[in-house]
Length: 122
Image (cartoon, rainbow, N blue to C red; front, top):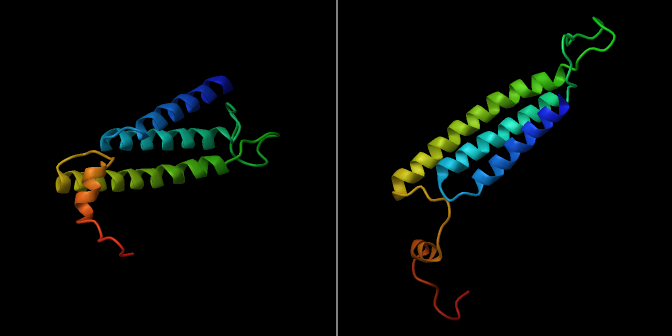
């Protein structure tokens, strides 16, 4: 069971990092979501993987730690809010620039800054 969870976390992390390095905004948003899922799964797995054990201290000899479950619930809410914010920002950037590219080329950077400063000025 631990091997399956660990490999799932690794696959989610690898796919998330791969998608975050893309040049378009949609794969970047999906990659960040996959990374947040990997972190949530990791947090959940830190509470010991146990079947049929209650998360209540004193009910059994070895209870499951309830803190990772609470952290995962909080992280799900935060990641949903951050994903919504990133989607809105990428949509706004697409509507203003007409492109959903993440990177900026040197010619685009020079044209957005205006003319270069005169020589000798600092």
